Image (cartoon, rainbow, N blue to C red):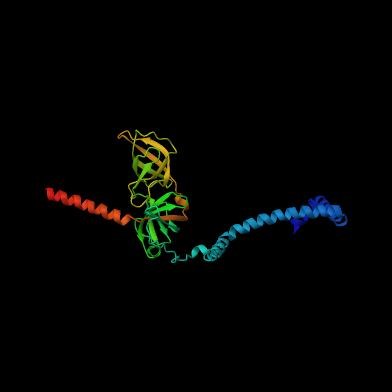
Length: 292
């Protein structure tokens, strides 16, 4: 107690000055509208600043619980999205005309069907695309698949009643016959498992005059794909010093990271062509055995 009185006695003048200053400021802001408005404004700024800092500190300690609450809310809302529900479109069946040729005598070779992409990967070494069409809608193995803007996507490799699985071009085991539009040279297209935007084209001779941007089309030697359809464009030309062929880096025409709608193409003559190929191989093998 003695120390308190000593402190007051020592700083009596300063304490009285501060008290009188506070009283005078109170009278000033109480009985003067202009100063009162300015004072309230300044007070709001100061209290607002302190409140914001306090809220930041408080939010920091409450962030964990807030995140949990938001995650629970998002989980509830996401489960209500229509994208979580897939309607089996089992009514879309292509019925072929009984007349397989037109009035000019030309036979229909290919039939196209639209389909929706349900599942697609681009980051694995073996990527697949799943479609909402299956055997009930006329989809079969070995049918070709193209993106909605015409770029080659892959080939159907498995079919269930209402769904089908497509081996994407972004599959390290997928080999596709293609050709250079400008020179008509044929080569083999494959993927190295790295960048999903680019494929590798081999067996194009160095005698071809190629430039960046040249068009690559589906070739003539595949039973699954109609020839002359877009595959991609030349991005880089690499000379293989050990051979007489280029190694071409091809930018895909199909955007594999954003596949939504595709077209499935059926070769109506596939069974006949495939049977002829097998019969020919068997006939040649039998002839070799006989000659021995």
